[in-house]
Length: 174
Image 1 (cartoon, rainbow, N blue to C red):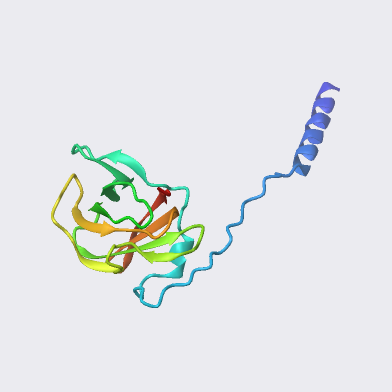
Image 2 (image 1 turned 120 degrees about the vertical axis):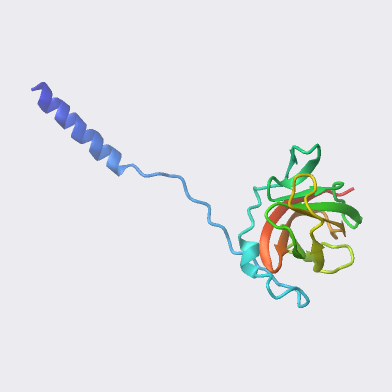
């Protein structure tokens, strides 16, 4: 009798549990509307912008060589001041996993969908990552950089026409 009651209770629990559903609704990521500038390099792809992980903000890290940087540890790091809109700053880029090549960087503002060159001379690309191992990185490169407005920006970094890494930064008003 106890076995029959246990079996009945067990079946009833299975029946109830099988009717339960998760009420958690998965967030659907809407496609972004990207309009690439005419003068941008042809290897920059609209799909690169859809893959931006906005939650992966650049963080401060130490290289073990005595230098603090901001970026994505063991991939791409920056030594330089925090950016403010329309203010040219000097950055020293550090690359892990690349030791030479043409450097391209594209700025993308999350809120306004503005696509902007990041190098202060208005160019998208320049030759010249290299310089040997610096601060533990495989290569480095100095540049002057600027962004036209405040907001959350993704900096898409390409080496020799291939997406190398993306830095997500907050540019605050002065």
